[in-house]
Image (cartoon, rainbow, N blue to C red; front, side, top):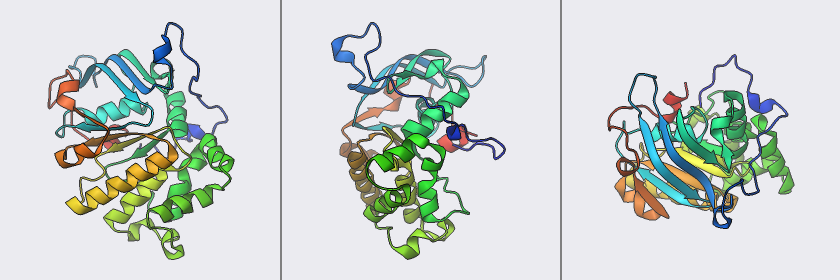
Length: 277
């Protein structure tokens, strides 16, 4: 997400928003938080009070560890849904729970902290920091999130060691690559750095906004396999937006967004990074 430079990252605060790891009141035994990472019920969102909704979803549940593909054309509201799941924007109606935390009850700064601690994001245009090296870009989430930094340490490695391990698994672990400016990388290399950055510190959920749209078919498949492997290693749920039908069979489940979203098609356009500005 693109925050203004003058804004102090709220993730640096000692306050964190922890997921509720015990059943919420009124939930049945088969609806414990371990079953679902995401639960939406009658969620709608409009950009303006007098405009029609761009997202209107009756129900959506995503299981822990699931690899879900959301497929649909540009402008159908997929990126807006990712922004809702990441807490960048707030639904006007309905219930949206992520890791059993009701995002509708959190103020903007609290949602920012929650996202930094629990959600990895892979942007369509990657959004790497141009003046940082490859290794520094990957370590960045652990600068913003004490929780993710501690997860690295609890696994017996430093943040830097975790970054190098992830990059090494993505064939980016050589010293001359680690200390290279990201502006010197190819598109495919930038994708791998973005994936490592999203996965460091073992976030419980990774959301990806069409990160393979600029790649040829062979590179799309290779990148997806790398993302699957690293998500599984880190135990992350993956929600992946795409318009490419050839990728869909590789996921545990796929949803046609037009069948999920009751809002009128074509009422929204823009990538996740544009939504977050």
